[in-house]
Image (cartoon, rainbow, N blue to C red; front, side, top):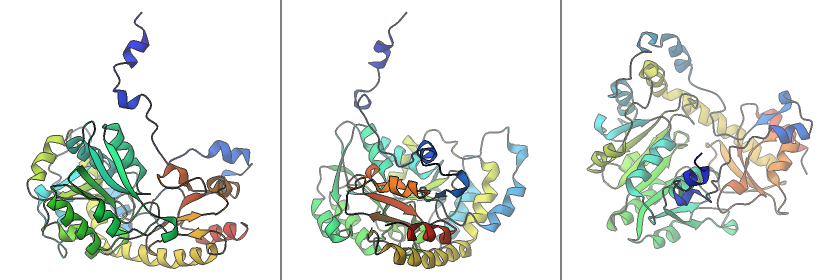
Length: 377
């Protein structure tokens, strides 16, 4: 019998001691320890739309093309791409061959790393931000360098420090906007400064707008995509659009980079096109996300008011349904919220944060959350 040790030695060396960060924890064992009933739990851990999805999307579920279930998808995804073009028509002029779909935006990030990263490749980002991207860089053998947001500056992004760090040693620059986990929104003028500086060094810039539906379309990097061929804008339908279970994201890229992305775009079958009408109806219903942003703004303002004397609150946008809370005593804040029946994302799973921080997502039932927090000391 062949020793499994010999098989394991074939695994890429970078993965042998690799410890990925992930804020998607299973809290149920700990909740049972605290004797909290399932019906009493408020899940504020994942960045879904607290109000679900559009009613147009719900109605479209009755028109799924089940006759096509035995066939492979039509990889042109024309209907979806046309809906995306229409969505952005007032912001940028897009073409179908500049839009790439994938089963979730994180898979687009993985493919972009496949394109640009090999052993020793350097990536510049800032932290805290989306932990999974940092994992993807390291899994491909890359080195993730970051500009840390500072506690004494309320974790507000400092674009001057970031600009000063850009040099030609980097293969990629990665920025998420709005920021995950703080929910702060970087202005498009700042994004453009970074993209322009990076272009001078020949560096591609990934702007991850997974939470981008919670900011104005004019603040999206898509609004400047016609000016910069080194810009790659990634969007998700899992957050603001409320389609987390369907898993669909898209990339906007212009110029010659789109030709090279095609080489990494394997496999081409990324989404079951029998559900295309759900996507197109979602993209058509722009009023839905505007109402969500309005409701989130009201509820988040109430939450911030409740939290201001109990926790440290950091830079955040009112219309973005996530925020970071901290406590000064360095205790386990994730565990503290669990004891009160509230599931959050633990801060120590984000680089540059620790166990005395959590990311909190605004729930649909804000009243119950406010009642729980009112009881916290």
